[in-house]
Image: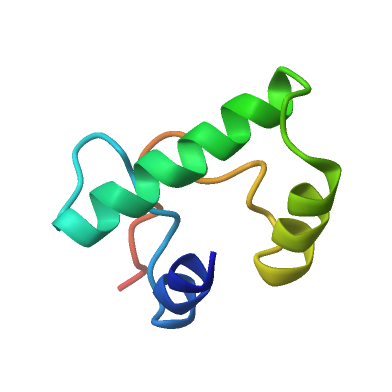
Length: 73
């Protein structure tokens, strides 16, 4: 969990488990994907879910779907 907090604090978006840019992103992406999967199935320990909520708010939703907005010129 601390590694995910650090990853986000560095300014990265949510890590991906597909189409990742680094092994670190892939590892974190797989881990967070499994946590979300367990939460949806009711298998995630409530204590762990609360810790994730406090450490990395928004972890349940993850990335916004679609392309990121283009910067205005």
